[in-house]
Image 1 (cartoon, helix red, strand yellow):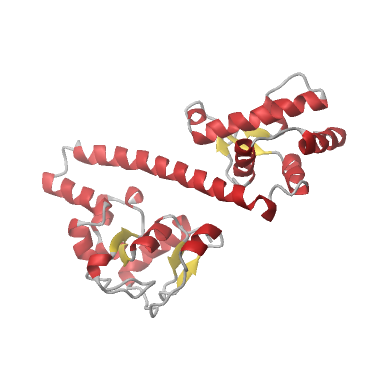
Image 2 (cartoon, helix red, strand yellow; image 1 turned 120 degrees about the vertical axis):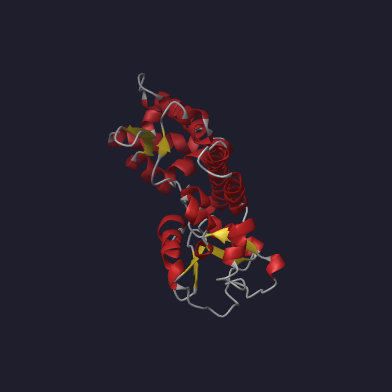
Length: 271
């Protein structure tokens, strides 16, 4: 994109109608450091539909700059062959910043971006979990009782919860000690674990239900001394609804828990 095209697109973006849905998808692509997959299978998923809507914006812009050939998305993003992902062009990112589409003026839209990405993450995770559960249920090398315990562990129940209670006696955020009100959750996610790790009590926390969600989504974590870590990416709407502060006295993790905690801190937590 040369400078004259960039100037023409900037003028067009001020005048060409962009729907709310298209704006949300442009922001999603802008905020995605890893890009959107451009494989045929991925194009049928929500982010693939987002690329189609971005392409629709690009097609309208092409008419403005007089480009007659190429994909509509080509003015907005490029396909990185090394990773098979669509990435927003630096020039278009600069245009979005100049228009103020990436700052506080787009706050309500950014909330929608977070919600859509949360939904897609949940759907993707659900597919992985379903495949893992099917593999466990159909395994001929795992006993029926062990299969049942592995499935129960995903829900924080059964042998896994009993093992977690040997390490954890209360919620590390709130201090709540009524075990009936706490959720048992994996630090190293169930889908990333070996079967033995799925049942290992050292891989678990007992935590209040609303903080369980934030922990599993990577919005909170803990250091080795038990101090709460809060992600800078925690959506503002969550902060308004749930005050995220540690009222429990921090307590160090046991040595057996540290590798699992480290996995959560490096692979799940969003600094």
